[in-house]
Image (cartoon, rainbow, N blue to C red; front, top):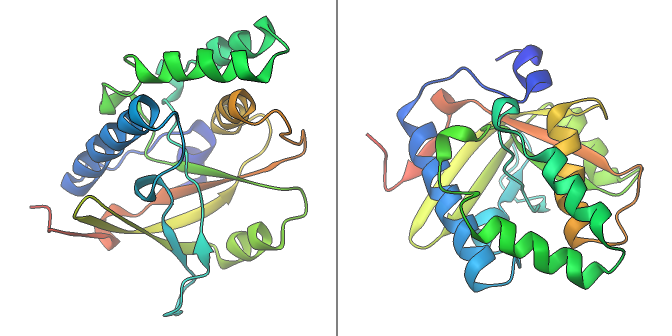
Length: 196
C-alpha cells in the first residue's frame, strides 16, 4: 500500500475478500438508504481496535465513496446548493442514494472514510496508531479488516466526497471536520464465514 493510493482514493489490491466485502457493503448501504431512511446500521459502524488491544476503542460510522473516475461529488454539491432546507436536502439525498448509487461495487474505492470533529482526541489517537482493525458484524457476517489510517487533506478526492455526502445529512457539519481514510490490507484481513 502506498500513500499514492490513498491520495487518489483508490487501491490496487485484487483480493477475493475485497470483492466480497465491497459487494456486501454496497448491499447493506442500499438497504440502509431504502429501508431505514439513511440511519447508520451495525453493518457500516464497525468496532475499532488499536494495535495489540483486545478491548475495542469504540465504533465509527464509515462511508464508502466512488473511485475518482466515477465520482459524484459535484452532483452532491449541486443537491446541497439547490435548497437551504435541511429536510429537502436529506430527502433528495435519500432518493439519490436509494436509486442506483450502490449497484456497482466495482465503482467504489475500498478506502473507507469517517468524519471527526475538529481537534478530536479520537481522530488523533487513530491517526497516531497508523494501523487499526475495523470489525464489521451484521446479518450473520463478520469482516475483520486491518487498515492503514490516513488523515486526508482537503484537496483529496475522498475528503471532498465525504464532506459533500455528510453535508446532505448533517446541517451542522463543521467546515474544519477531520476526515480519516482507512485503507485495507486485504491479505491481513479475515471474514466469518471465510471467503475463499
